[in-house]
Amino acid sequence: LAKTTQPISMDSYEGQEVNITCSHNNIATNDYITWYQQFPSQGPRFIIQGYKTKVTNEVASLFIPADRKSSTLSLPRVSLSDTAVYYCLAGPLSSGGSYIPTFGRGTSLIVHP
Amino acid sequence: SAVISQKPSRDICQRGTSLTIQCQVDSQVTMMFWYRQQPGQSLTLIATANQGSEATYESGFVIDKFPISRPNLTFSTLTVSNMSPEDSSIYLCSVGDRKNTGELFFGEGSRLTVL
Image (cartoon, rainbow over all chains, first blue to last red; front, side):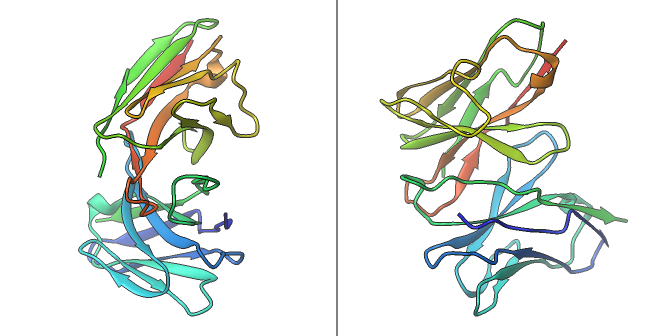
């Protein structure tokens, strides 16, 4: 399971685009990158997942360069409700066997008015 | 997707007592995970609970302190035994997606305060 490193905190303002980068230098060939969002007093919630290049959904975009040693979560035009902790995980898809979902410290994003 | 219900959502406990947290899933799942999240911290995996076998504990967590049951594919319990104030935390139950997409689903958590 690849260890991930993220900035501890970030600040932004409403309407701005926010990019959170995650480093996973020892990512394995069969590892995917998954991002979660956690609000206070709630469990984490899946945002987006990708393997390489770019993935986009209604919430965010995920950019993964060719070497896959890092990834960037992009949140377009953030609002106050995007204030949360964002976690990056790198691991295989199967939730059975040896896959142990391990959370790093996460990035605390604060969006200001 | 999976919907997870945890009970209790919160509790205040006395030092030296034990509390059992229940986790109910709306579908059958192979593996369930129990996490602890201390105030202002990230999630720390306590153990992986497999149906029909002993739970697998992570370093720093032992069965005597955190016994886990997994009687079927939709239910699990985590007991926090002989509690101390250091056990005050949020305990989260999580399951993996049945289609093995790697997505994890979480309950709302059980916030325990030990006095």
